[in-house]
Image (cartoon, rainbow, N blue to C red; front, side, top):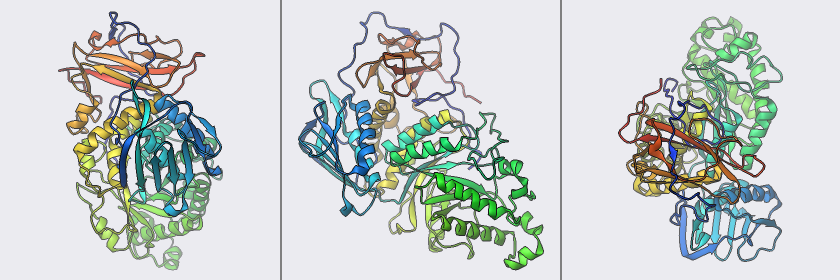
Length: 615
């Protein structure tokens, strides 16, 4: 879990990332024989049912409903007023249509947001498209899910304009738990990096962003009671050192996520992976016996306080993760005070570890949170049955999941094989669910990303989290990878429009995203995991705006576009580069020179060239 590392080029990033340099003049040339591109009236059209994840029930009707500027967004419940504002902005980025927000009653052409208690699940939703769109959620999160399904359904056509298909959708996740994990305690991941992951999760209807907040290198959650924590951070693999964000930054991120139907699940590692905390506060975590020392009288007082501070920020998550992997408490047991051992009837280091889990579960229960541990934790009689086990020692099957469930412990499966480094098809075809698994015990699954800097989070997760999530959302749909691949390609292009307001149309590529996905999305930790956009002498690139107005500014040297960067005017001849690999970055700016959205990034590789591996 800790040793899989790879530095890869970053593709499609929302927000800044680490640039790589090029020599002056080693850039593609603009094709001067083509007239400057005007503001587009169309975007890539897509079939009507490009949904990821696939819904539980979908019926396609006859015809389409046009989306025009005369339509409105109507929120029938005051709790959805803020969602209406968020959805208005997202719909504009995807469709170019800026709808007004108006009170009821609704009329033809409107999009109506409401709640329906009869759905009996806060994540359940229905979408009905007739002469208007009606989205109903079992709760706020269900309504959010309905809006993102509609975003995936929007198509733009030169003849028809912007339309959504007439349809009926009734949906809810099969799994209680759907999500993605990012390790922010090994290398720096900025708040903007994390927001880009949250937007991706929101778009694909993933519920929980699991953040690995502490480890050997860094402590990234600020404590008012223990302000020294996080003041002596370091980094893994020579990467950027994780900083200690402020409490206000964490509160802002939690609010940003909650508003988009994503809840942040924090993890504070105990009792191993402890060095960052020990360096700062040995008086509460020590003496150092190869782990945190739970026999220290100050230890649980501190953990109670820290967990309370954590729960004040991440209020909406029902879970807190306490780590408990890859360590032993044998040293702490051998050096424990005799009175402590006698009072708590501890018989061994293994028993002390189990006792620790029970103690932490007791603390978290006070804060109305459920406890999650990694499967390396000792699961013994001392461990309460409600403690959830994240199972990651899985190799193409279900690992020890059945054993834990037979002990009546809930399970979340987070297999390392296949993981983010394996082909998209392999990720899709692994299924955490097996017939007969009880939903109260098999809670779901997520994709993991360990030990990488923030610039790699969205690029690595955007192709591997959606297939994993579809199998958590609808594990028995009967859908095949051949069905999934074109849906993911279409959704990925919509995600670009949502996050950047831009999209690319290439001609003459040897391999593009759809071809890569059709071929299984191949790639591994040794050869790279990103789709290789491959060009030759006939290849050209056209950049287009998904929204009206503004100026596209771009770079071809790896630098982030700014308001004074060249304005895009005409198609770019990809073979004009002297390099075998180069990076395009583009960003949309308004007339005042302010960026409208995130940065569109794509790496291009010359046909026949083998990119050098980065160390």
